[in-house]
Image (cartoon, rainbow, N blue to C red):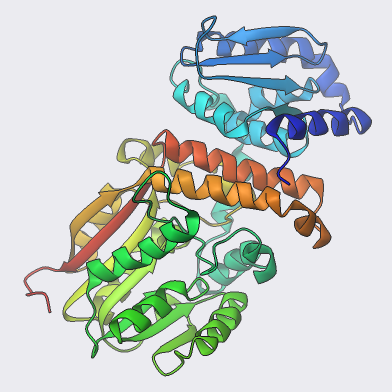
Length: 425
């Protein structure tokens, strides 16, 4: 059973009390850090947050009676020092270590994002304190070998782990929710249908998929449109299971899963599709990524890209500093923005974006479903050898991303591209 949010928060506090590692530094600056953090949060304007401090006293951020409302329990004063010096990375790391708990993690992050202009968490100072994380992130370049290392760092958790919370097609990307009551399973099938409708491959077409996942989209296109699909990945784990799934579906004559980097694409393809893989390319490699697509696209062909994005106005600041997701979840990852995609394709290719759809709430719903399923299978997660700290890391990852999409701090773009000056085939 999925434990109630309150039960998880209580458990976190008890764990902290039995394993307190508060340092001399924390004790020396506890009062100053607490005062500075609470003063910074005093401008809270949207919703209401009740904070229970380590000494048992409470303070309320926001107007009395304001909704929505969430509660946070701060287990030890180290939280204030980490938030003051390290901003969003410090808050996330403090959650991993059990320095704080809450009755609704996604709502707390949601409220923090809605208050980020009135009560900011990050500053010039936090970015200076986080320079080591930024340096480590920039060393994880997505070269041919670096891409494999970065992908392995996430996907070596194992196919069995991801199968615990993904839908039956093993789609590790956002679904497409047509109605509020849609299930995750239905939304993922609709996502495949949407991409088929956008690309419209013919029975004689050869489709290239960059980023195989576990083969769900490739199998859908081959089954529905009778086309041939070559899908490439740099993950050996994914290739092995995707190939087995293709064979079990009786589609080996039309779907091939290859262990190949996008830089080594060969041949020509009438359709090219890539779902949530561009985030693992890296800004300095975007020109090469799109040039590879341009070279491989047959005359009159179409390209479809699904991408998690940063709003244009935030990109220039975002790209300068590592964040919590890059530190803990996706090493080497970097989200594009629409402005940069258009600029890179215009400068380095003959491709142009012809259709854009932004559906961030689809991803919020997808992440909520993944988190629910993750906790429904928590016993299985722990039987695989994952400890409480790992569980809190993944809870924070899923909940914080859900909040970021819900508040439109992240976008989910469905992009269609074609080559300028050619009729569509």
